Image (cartoon, rainbow, N blue to C red; front, top):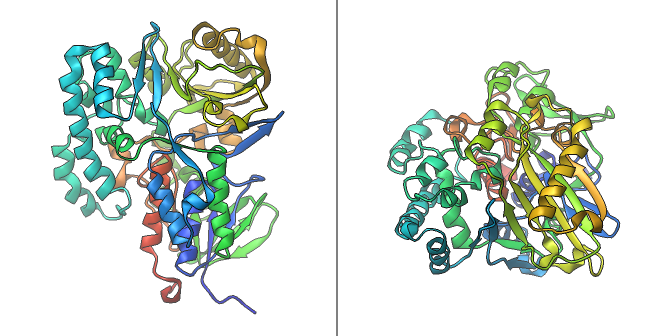
Length: 498
């Protein structure tokens, strides 16, 4: 029998796309998810190599209640399918001089960590945590899952923006509370986790400190890929379809409304609405290339400021490094100047600050017995740097290897048994990210909320956007919230009218 329900196509199966599919299925839509790769996940892809399991992208879950909501919507309990475990400390930060700061869940415990580094900044820490809490209440609790489709929404939020100093940068606001340079770094680096420059990202992102303490930092046993598989199973459990190796070449239109998509193999799939979890700039520049766009033109997209990219090295060792924590920041000698090299000069510097991920501290099943699984991530300029990664990747990897040997992984080169790399070129070619930017548009004040590509497209009816490039922005909480925005914009399927 013909299925008469309105048909929604979701392009891409990252966290945002999967969350949107689950919500639309619950509202009665027929949903087809189209994924160009051979498994779901997008940036949260999983590599399996030589007995090691590597999460390709996100590894930190900071708002598990957002996942619990999706399971409830699908009529299941998250705890039946996933084992989420809180990690405490959330992460450790190793400064260039060898000093280590543990970022712990307890406010009292964190206060003592601050006291150990700079006793004079304890009072400032207390005030910062209160400021972070106030920002969270507005910027996340009230606004993250609400659409910003008219400029009046900006006007209405302006008093809070001024009161909470959202017009300041994260680093600038942190400097109001801390005098010690190490603590300024420790409490301002978070925007890098979502593609932002701490020197220019709106101070609203200081909310992350409170978000972490309120909901804790979690790890999914089996890795982030276990979460992706769980979400994918919710879709098929609800009757949705996920098609792999299905690359969308174009979003088709008739008049001012979408009609479906055309795949790279020429297949045409009709739909009443399309939700794009593809990179926002790619959605408009490539997938809607034949449509006469008025706001998000190629010229406007080219002028926008994009996030940095990432160099990620995945490797496995034939020994365990028991002294290395699950989440660890290995910082270099420079902070502000390195950020300027990455974001402003777009220069690939000789030094770097690294995020080192050792999930086998928590889940030994991700590596063969007696081995460790790692990935190390270095923020680097996107492809406007002109770096030829086909030549530079191995050179850069070796520099990182030497840095890790000198700091936290002695004799590393003698114990590597498997290895692979992800470069900015891969972000462009494999993940179809404009300019190889890892997180789409930077979260600056005038690239946030109403100023970002809207969740309901301004260009064509029936097109909706989820993911890092739309409101509220990058990061797992952000992209899942973007799916809620889209679902709330749509009626129940029985009430849908074109």
